[in-house]
Every structure is written in structure tokens, then in C-alpha cells.
Image (cartoon, rainbow, N blue to C red; front, side, top):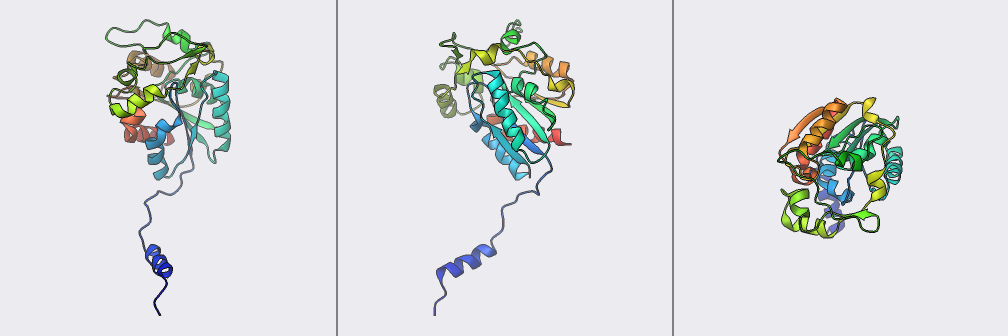
Length: 249
């Protein structure tokens, strides 16, 4: 009598090598995206951190109001099984500065991000003169209470080192950024009480590198620099993941 094909399959899979995944770490990592995009931009970073044994959670910010984004982040922090390393990219740095006051958060990681002090907003920080040789974000005038990046300039400004087929779609699929989120000042400043880490992107055309260095110095952050556009989590995902892991040391 011939053996069942299902028995043969079970026998084969029983001896198949398992995927290499590290033992679970006693730390959770929460990833917070910035303006104009959503949490899917973290996918490659998520995959690397997950493979290395971390519980990784991704926030989907509405980016309509700062309070709404902080609330969304707080909900995800509450779901984490372990103490949290809270990571923010771009405008996500505003969110983690406020949400990072949560006692479950043990450290903050800023990735090409704003790192405000109390009373500062994105709008007030953007009023600073842009240093010579650097660029400000090519935003269109507000429309119906929201901002967008000029789609024709988005690929170069946001992600010049990412494949054009990807950035072209990103430009067309932008998530509108609410003026309430842009104009609302920070009231809680987590980096004053918790360790912080900052990745400066030296080819950034959305948040000038000089601004980023200033934020990092003021916060006393452990700082690294990388030759990357603003979309560093897309163009240098492994390096971003490795830097995030340094906050768990």
C-alpha cells in the first residue's frame, strides 16, 4: 500500500530547517512614521528587528492632529509586552517626544526627525533660516487645512536614493498632513528624562541636517550620521535597524 502523500509531506517538513529567528528579547520596539506616508515604510526595518528577536509594533498615525497621533501611539505602547524603545521618523519625532513621557517607554530613537522642546511646534521650528547649501521641504500651500509635498519634487526631496518607481508612487499616494498637527506645540518633553538616540541624515532635503544636529545636541542624544536622504528607513533599512538596537543596550 502506497503511503499517503500527506504523510510524506509531514515527514519532509518535520526535518526541514527552521527559519533563523533569535530568541525573544525582553524589549518591545514601537515604530512611529512621519508626515505624508504611513507605517508601511517601516517594513524592511520591522522584518530585521523581528528576526533579531524583538516584538515590533507599528503605529498608524492619522497625521491630522498632534493629540490624535499621540493617542494612537499611546494605544500601541499599551499593547507592548515589554518596556518600549520608541522610534520616530520625521514628524514622528514630535509624536514620540510627547508620547515618550509614558512610563512604559525606556528610551527614544529619533530618525531624521524633529526633536522639539516644550512650546515648540513643527511650524515654529520651520521658521528657522535654512542653512546655506541645505534645503527646506518643498511644500505646496495649505489646502482645506492640510499640507502636501509638491508631487513633482517629492522623489528628489523625500527619497532621492530610493528607486524612482517607488518614490513616484509615494508622491501620488501622499497622506495629507493636518495643520493642527503642524501648529500644535509640545507640552511634554520625554528626552529630558530618558536616554535618546539620533540618526542624522546628511543628504536630507526635508529636515536640514544642521537642524537635526542641533536637535541631537540639545537633547544630549547618542548620535550617528548616515549619507542618506530623508527616507533612510527605505534606503538604509539594515543600518536603521542596527541603530535602533543600540537603544536596547
